[in-house]
Image 1 (tube, rainbow, N blue to C red):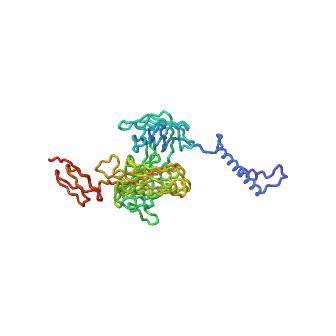
Image 2 (cartoon, rainbow, N blue to C red):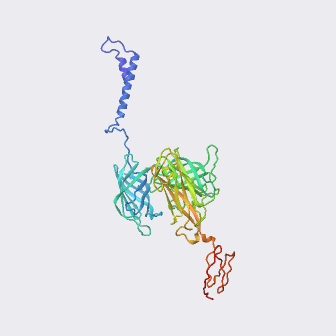
Image 3 (spheres, one colour):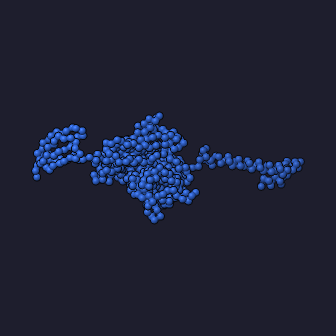
Length: 524
């Protein structure tokens, strides 16, 4: 407006001989000047506002505050496995406090010898990070670097020696630095939708998918090893306002998140616990429900193998084990309209063999392993671990190159590719090692593990079978003291005399006879 005003007031240029400027010319000059001003503004904004930065990136306010999932490499001597798992940190003026769950195991042992919540302290100076975690009797000292975007950190760590609760060694002194890394897990909050895929149970819902929706809310970060989760689930269809899941229709959720690991209780309107999502804290796998993780990159809450267990009035059972549940299976829940698709699908997701006599013909069940995403999955591995002390289960597959067995070696799966994994049950014992005799026969267990390095997923398939002894179906050997065994053919019924008298026994099948054997009986 100022420019326009000056042009109209001074209607001549360089004297009175110039003609007056037309309105059209004045409007054009104003438009031209405004374009120059806009171009200058854009050019200045492209300079990044000073500071010599040519990238135009907005500086990130770095902080250690948040939920972190840790990964710690084992020591080179293989003396223990594990360490920090997941937890929350709070930073104030460069100083950090917090807590994290931890788990330390001795090699070749499934049950950790030391686990719980570790207290953490530390500091940050720009991107340099120092953390100390007191995990029971073992202390981990971590140093590393926070990424420029504040989403990851990595470095090296050392550890002191540790002990189990009974004082036995658990964790060793390590002075040579080992590698660690951590990723920041954003809050698990928002609408969820996905499915429950039934894998078995008394309700008989095997290999059926049930659509579910709901919401999850995460409590604020308080610097402890976990944060509370609350929410709800609904199996009501928006189209029909009806549910096709027979076990329940509406339920509340209550649980926690630590790092990327999530565990939730499914609670009915009357406060009764109807089910579990994710391995319960402290269960050490006793329920058969596998861990559930939050894949924050893709916004998916997912479990592999049996990751939920349900027992309600409509689907009677017990939550103590998937073997007694009304329904169990896998979940996939997408957060805030993300696509709910796991990279690997397993059908079925659990194997339960019928009772089988030791020494009888082995039985085989199959699992189909499929790549469900649009990219190639590289370095996939399969491994089978018997958990009863004997090789009751064996595995073979057609997942290697050109359909050959993988034999534990890594293999690739193209998009849409499938392969068959066969598990054979040939029991060598009737009970797991350490089972009291009055509890035999008890289920024999194994676990098939599928590792997908590219996605960070570890899938587990529980395998269960029951063995029966041959002796349960035959006449036990008897000792009658002093008898004379006479030659005889196989008779339908064996006749026995009291001690001190001859006894006629059955012969072996066919016309074979038994040798005469003389004994002297003790007469009471």
